Length: 477
Image (cartoon, rainbow, N blue to C red; front, side):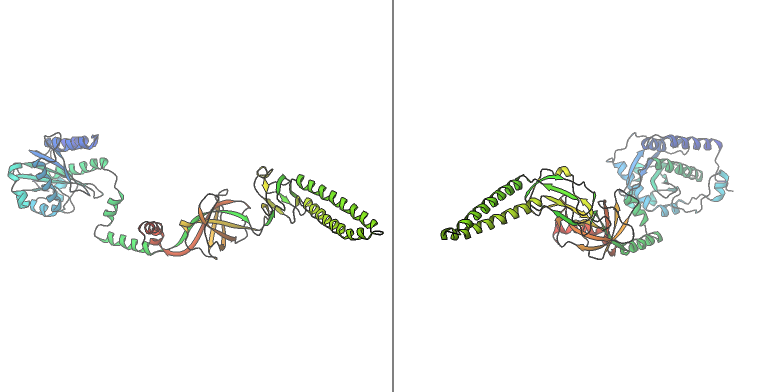
């Protein structure tokens, strides 16, 4: 045990009081004031200052003893900041010049923790003008007394909160350094409560510090960049009928009535809808009247042609008129029979609300509804142009229905439209048709999101594909 270090009960009480004041500080300014002004009761000094370290900036003086607030433009503050930066860069060399350490014997005699390394750069150490560059040492006598003490503030995680410097005429003893080391731990812990959260940039710089950790991080990053991943995109999709029977309007007219309901199963011969027959009924009645008239004229001409050669010649004209009226009558009757449309096959009626069709004018060949087989369905996805990843037939995709968040259905792509078309939502997209694989089949009309699986690409390409495409559109390269 060394006889050079003596910590009495009064000093321990002051140490405990200063530690309590540091923990109770409500702000960083209050804590800085306590550090540079109230520590004099434990470690006598004439001047003190707290230098705030910064990961991005050179650092600045945060507080000076005897002043409520320091002026960064003052010559003394600028000189003091340069001194602290020089000491921070060469802490290890200055610690060797100090000639003091915290040996295990001294720590045991005071109850303080032992220093594992006598020349550890994070320990307080005394310094003088000889330890500074010549341009800073030349102004030492103008600002400071002969002796000074450098106290680094570093927490257990290795984060630096700057340092505290003390200056006085008498040299600093080993007991002063031991007490300052204990206070430095308390101050660093208290300052960590006011320190901002580490940003991603700060964490990245800490991770990429020279050493084994940086080599490991760079190796993991390199592997992650070249790691192959499947190129996938998301696209809205719906379950549609495969090979449905299209029910079209047989005539130009107005829909009078829809006999079936959406998603209603129908059998062959079931009435589906009917067109307004008023116009066709009038045309049929007129054609029937013309046919009766032509038939009577032909009958009279045929009777007169027996005795009169002139009437014999008119009989051929009357016969032609009778045949023309018969053709018109048959055509009108056929059209009148088609105003009521029946189901040609069994299936489920797929169309919108019947009220949307009642009273609506339609043209011949216009699609009214579909007759679909519920067991024969396929998946139709709409791949936006911006998300196109060169999808080809044979690729796979997965449907995630909106109505069943825990269900998923796999499908194989059959066709991809060669050109993009506007979707009902107004998005320009490619139409992708796919057949479900496996035994499970979703219900007809189910909508959801499909994940289309493309080729395998490096992770870097997967992450930068969209930014690069946007950059090419803007830059034109």
